[in-house]
Length: 193
Image 1 (cartoon, rainbow, N blue to C red):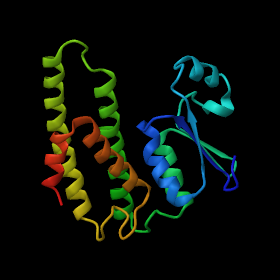
Image 2 (cartoon, one colour):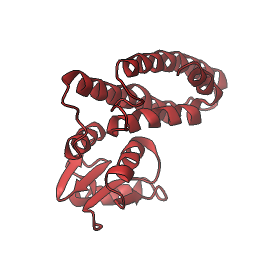
Image 3 (cartoon, one colour):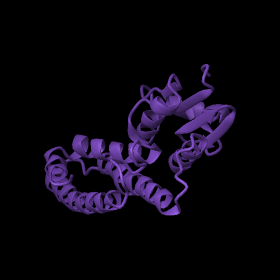
């Protein structure tokens, strides 16, 4: 572990770890970004999974170790970082908006984008197009809901005038949308302030 006492272990890809990397870049500069190689997957990971110190209590990633405290599961890590770095506003409504935005970005956008990629119908372009069209309609609705939630908060970010951990989850959801759905999402983002 490095001098800051912070290590994040996740696969060498974006996925569930990327919003945490963004947040840690601000909150714990110089954190150790321990990436599990995808070469040889799943063999490399299966070996690593046997070692609880590398795979955490659930044998799953991401895993955060900060100052000797081990935390697993993306949303729990996000909440831990938010509390540890004093980013929870004292106002309960503001705190709940941040938590709702984080959960919506993760559960309703980031996870489904990954599923869309991993479960794409092979050899059936029409089935994939139908699936993408359905997903785009879901994304449109969720983006509009996040926009409405953001409008209830003064400032540029869900955290106010500066980003908090939850803002990085929303940002990653938007980035993944552009990467996975391309012009479908670019068109949508142009319609939202």
